[in-house]
Amino acid sequence: MPAKKSTPDFILILITLSLLAIGLIMVYSASAVWADYKFEDTFYFAKRQLLFAGVGVIAMFFIMNIDYWTWRTWAKVLIIICFVLLVLVLIPGVGVLRNGSRSWIGVGAFSIQPSEFMKLAMIAFLAKYLSEKQKFITSFNKGVLPSLLLVFTAFGMIMLQPDLGTGTVMVGTCIVMIFIAGARVSHFVALGLVGLVGFAGLVISAPYRMKRITSFLDPWEDPLGSGFQMIQSLYAIGPGGLFGLGLGESRQKFFYLPEPQNDFIFAILAEELGFIGGSLVLLLFTLLLWRGVRIALGAPDLYGSFLAIGIVSMIAIQVMINVGVVTGLMPVTGITLPFLSYGGSSLTLMLLAVGVLLNISRYSRV
Image (cartoon, rainbow, N blue to C red):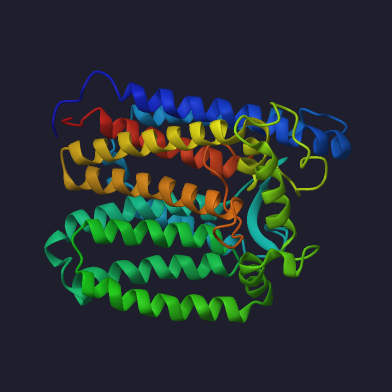
C-alpha cells in the first residue's frame, strides 16, 4: 500500500462541518414550535441532534485515521451483522413501529435504523466484490448477477419494513458502482425494464404508494390527504423568494408542514433563507461531491476507488431525491437530507461515510 499522506482533504472537512452547522441551526428553527408544544422544550430536537452530531463528528475523525482497507477485511462481517439487524427489526417487540414502518430498533431512549447502516455496509462489500471480480464484470452471470442478487435480497428485506426511500437509495448507489466498474450498457437496459416492472408492482401492491404517485402529479386533487405535505412544502418555498422571510420566521412550521425538521427541512430553509440560502446549501453539496469524485479518481487501488464512488453516489442520490420531493419534482419517498435533517441514524451514517472518504483522501494521488 502506498505511503499515507500527512493530512486528509481539508476542504472536504470544511464543507462537511459547514453543512452540519447549517443543519443544526435549521433543525432548531424548524422544530422549536413543535418541540415546545409537544415537550415544552423548544430545544428538544436541537439538543438531541447536537448529541448525534457530536458523536458523529468524533466517529468521523476516528474513522478518518483507520486505513480504508480495514473495511475490505471486515466487509463480510459487517454485511452479515446488518442482515441480522434487518431480520431483528421485523420482530414485534424488537423493532419499533413508527408511521406505519417497522424500521427502528430501540436502544434505551434512542433508536437505530438498521437499513441506514446497511447502505454503507453494502457499499464496502460491493467495492470488495467489484475490485476482486473486475475481469468478470462484463459477464452478466459471473459478474453482474451475483452482486445484484445480494443487493436485491437486502432491498427485499428493507421493503418488508417497508422503507422504499432507503431501499431506493441503496439500489441506486449499487447500480452506479456496478456501472462504473465496467458492466455492459445492454445489461442495464434490460435491468432497467425489469426494474420498471418491479417498481410498478411495488406501487400497485400498496395503495398508499399509488396515492403518493397521484398526489405528486396533482397534489391539489387530495389537498387534505395524500397531497397535503407536497402542498405545504410548496407554500413554504414560494413565499421565501430570493432572500427568504428571515431565519426563524417560517410560517409553515406552525403546524402546517408535519414534522418540518425531518424530510422537509429544505422547504423551511428555503422559506427562511430564500433562493440564496437554498442555492448555497446545494452549492456546498456540489462541492462535497466534487471533492469525493476527485478522491475516487486519485485512490491508489480499485477498492479505494469503488468505495469512494459508492459513498459519493449515496450522498448524491439522497440529496437529489430529497430536494426533488420537497420541490414537487418527485413523489414523496421519506428520505432525509444528508447532514441537515433531524435523525440520529442518518446523520451518524453520513458522518461515518465521510470519515471513510477522508481516509481514502490521505492516500489519494491528486
